[in-house]
Length: 79
Image (cartoon, rainbow, N blue to C red):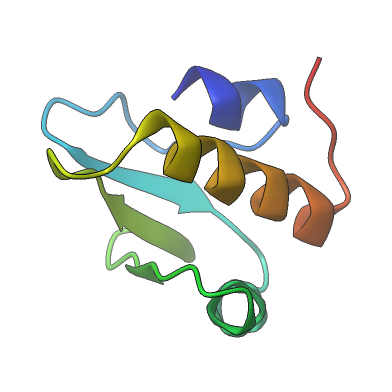
């Protein structure tokens, strides 16, 4: 969650399970662009945005790759 917040993106709620929703005004465009990069997320049913499920096999490297792509595609930069 820290990496998402550092990009200046909003989480509609504080996650209590390994599912994170990230708000986006162009969820379908963002999902398609992520898919082109080999990164997959789902539409969030609560808000317009992405739903990411973090399972035990997800590595720190994959999370970093996802956050870099998310930052590039949204035009946002972390610290």
